[in-house]
Length: 148
Image 1 (cartoon, rainbow, N blue to C red):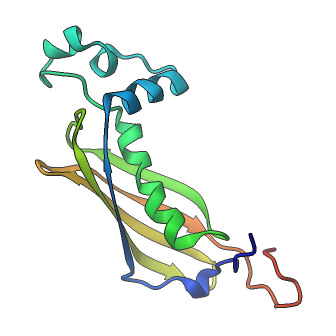
Image 2: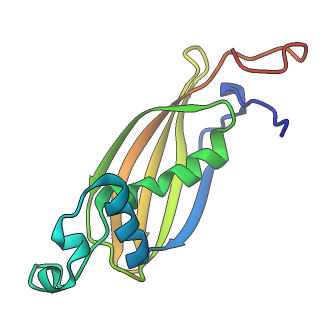
């Protein structure tokens, strides 16, 4: 696979990317297995039914992680994440469809850094709000063919 390595010059302020995904209890259970986060509000329907959520909910970080699909589409290969900030605003349930949007809000050509606004929502409203920072390699010459 020979893709052009992206640089800060490929980033456009205002550009967005949207992704849709349906969250399932299988995803939630697999995330618990991967991370070891077996909080019963995520994996125990009997317990979760007695909480304010009324049922099992997805892990906040599982939900937030879907923002990476958008970032990957816009900045790779080349750009790498340097930070994330997420505010978890509401629950996500088995069967919820997420609309995930990333928007470039800042591009610093000198520092080769970009900032992206992240938003994730269900039909009930916003469930995650956040931002991510991306660093880019120096521009490469055609003779080099890669990133520094």
